[in-house]
Figure 1 (cartoon, rainbow, N blue to C red):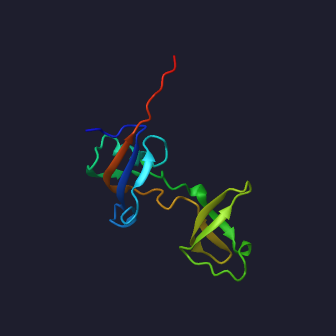
Figure 2: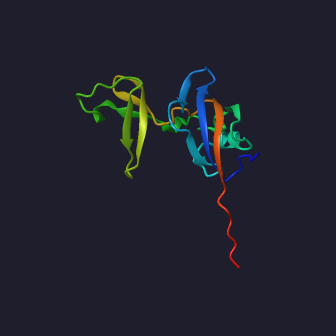
Figure 3: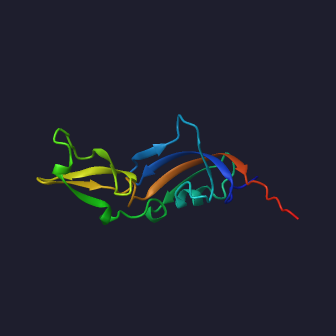
Length: 151
């Protein structure tokens, strides 16, 4: 049986959980996730987890945060003065907000705390600093594109 290797295009059904058991994402009810192994389309631990699998195989992998979304970066926590928000805006802890930097790049932040004069925003990935568990089922391997050698 063909085993997944770097460069293969694969289709995988998955159920992603935190170590607490809380589900953060799953493909159930959707098309399987399709990606090229080793291309950087998914986190390193996920790539490593599907490598060597065969079609129809199911397994559970544990991905430490360093092979997932990395550690939480304290520099990504921002104190934003309240007067920078519209006066009529109802800001709440846990609220996601879109922001842009000086170069026009868009990114999402989450309100983590509201103080008298500032609102604390966290721009870290929501799964940063968290170990992840995935239940995987390999649905298909398309295989590598054939290498054409020109004379």
